[in-house]
Length: 276
Image (tube, rainbow, N blue to C red; front, side):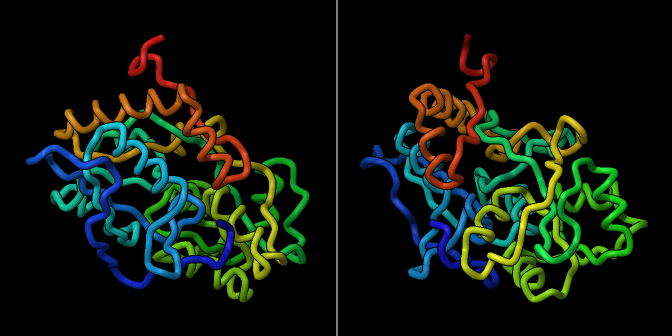
């Protein structure tokens, strides 16, 4: 799973992918948008198939809903506009639930949570900081990479904009390549892609920097990840949440997260949605 990093260029449209038992005639297809280059949430195999934690979980949800689902890979920066324009019914792929996004769109219940972290070369001298003020002081004057349109970019703009040079990237793969090549001093992203990178041979010189940065310290980072929908998608959101409730109770979300992350990132069933 932590093999070669997926390479995504442009928008890749996949043929219809049947992930449920034979659906009833006339059943509505669920159109799912995702980023195929954000390991281990989503990635693309050498054969051009989407894989990853969110893909596997979404397939299980579709099975439980007895729906036919079609996945399309698209760079993150274009996904929300495409959702709002009606191209997709739901987006998945490590998408943080934040108050800002909830103002215009709707989320399923959260099903996973991870902090964001800086990463840098082991030789950078940025390691060993125990608090954010310590690391912030060490980063002053550096060139830092971050994927555009993410919570990590929001963190950079809020906490470091006047103290570092920020370099924006369209996708995680491009960010990784510049970090590995030494064209930037450090990079910021969700912890999961750094786990994926550092477990590859080419990522061996890179380390994940402490401390973890999360909602407890910076409430605008959100309370976990969920599926993102338009606010008019009430029926689909209800069905998706009901499936998530069952998959959480059955331990399936835990199982999939341990497979892709190496540890449990699952979030307990939402008592408001799933009941006590």
